[in-house]
Image 1: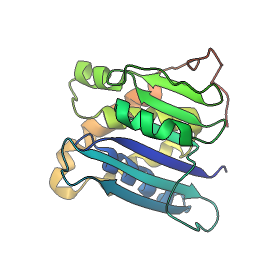
Image 2: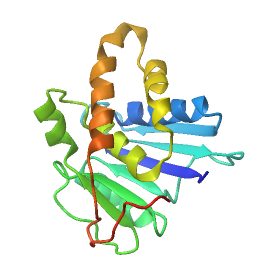
Image 3: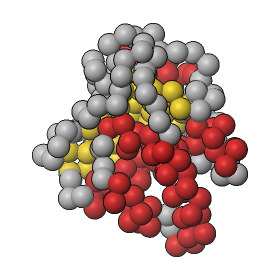
Image 4: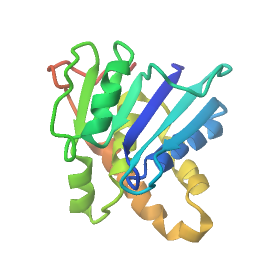
Length: 192
């Protein structure tokens, strides 16, 4: 299986660290080597936040992902900051509701998902992060679909168990959202 280096970035309060933790737990459940490294500014909500996640079949030398092969961004400043760091041939998943510009590079796949709009329309505002995670799972096959439920159970604390259904609904919406081509018209429906 391919090793995955993720950078997940946006504003604090968008559930970016939770999304990364979900991927890390899923990797653990699949007996993979994992790393989850959160980072956020002094103000949790509204400040910048990002995390690095690595899913690997071998030992991980460093938790820092300097050349991600998967980028997930939920605001324009994060796309500006991380677009040039994406590994050639990598994929950048963009919440097209919140990020108005397209990816400039023509050597990576730009995948646009109106995640915030979808979440609002589905009555699960605040879960655009998990819609994007569902799209990432669909496009990259980074984790198995059958791992999703167990990983959500691990990452959602018992005190917030009532949020399980909404989170699963969001991931499922991302899995079901069909993106056929990237911003350059390249077919992205192939396995990595």
